[in-house]
Image (tube, rainbow, N blue to C red; front, side, top):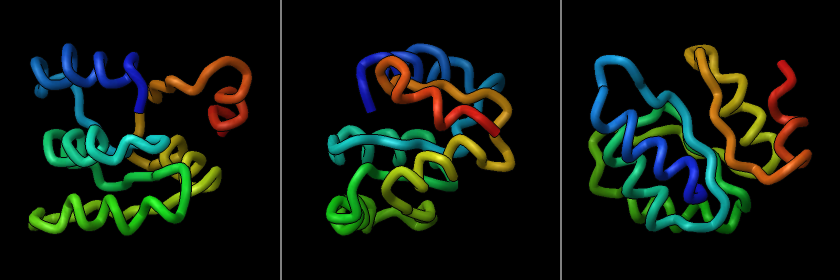
Length: 104
């Protein structure tokens, strides 16, 4: 999760929870920040870039009562974007690389 998304979550979602709900998150490799975001916003689904990061995230979330489903890879990003409860999708994937995930 990059600066843009972290800022959006911190500024808008955290301060206006009656207007926004995070249903899914995707991140690259910053599991510390992702774990903090999961704890704060309680998404149903989380995707990480690489399968090797799944265990690290699960350990970071071990104290949560309600854990999100954790998936990985390019297909994981697609599942986040296509989440049935998602009304608006915000992406911080640089340039054209992120566009392929936005087609429904």
